[in-house]
Length: 298
Image (cartoon, rainbow, N blue to C red; front, side, top):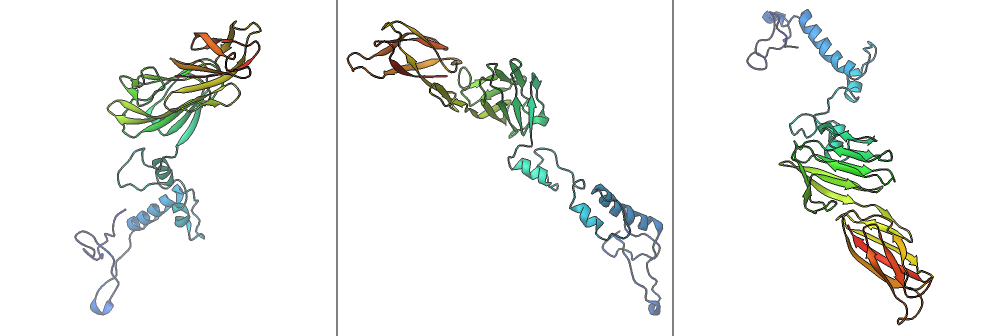
């Protein structure tokens, strides 16, 4: 579309080259500005382009179609993720920028994520076997996503980086400082990641799964795991009872403590002579006594 450009235009009415319209003044010999088809067609198509983009069908008797179109989806384009220009922001762009997840998707196979997956929650179903989720290469500081293990199987979900990228700031892996992979082992395990530039993801939080029962566990964001339970002593005092932790410790068992119910302080005791990541042999000084235990590891 362009300004009116007929021979009778008002030359430079709005500045150099910005012609306009003028009224007639027959007494002074001033002729009115003439229309032409080019101008009318330009105005028509500019307006109808907005109306039709808003999903409206042009109707001669409807006088608010442009207003309806401007209030509808389809007229404005949502800027690209992380766009920091002066383009108009749609509500979709604003919601994404406020930190709301742009989408939630479920995967049940090994999956390579792309930059288009930033801003999403990825629910991973590993019930059919161990799964590997490959993160996108870090290209934009501030890009974030969340990986969540959604099934209750014993199969692990391994989150790995691309290229030379690393994950820092989370203790949910051996070493506790940085790694190219993080393992989610139980339902409810999750990993919140934010790209920091320089080829790194920062683990904002991880862990969180729990089993609250007589024998259960709690996974902390630091990667530390606290477990507890009770075992009944062997019918022969001092003989072992095999106890399996509710959750296998991934890398280390730091502490295992006991407390017994019943008996006297002189005769009531519980201990273990074998400690593994999977459990221990519990022994007690009183036959068939209830013996409580607590374990801490990661």
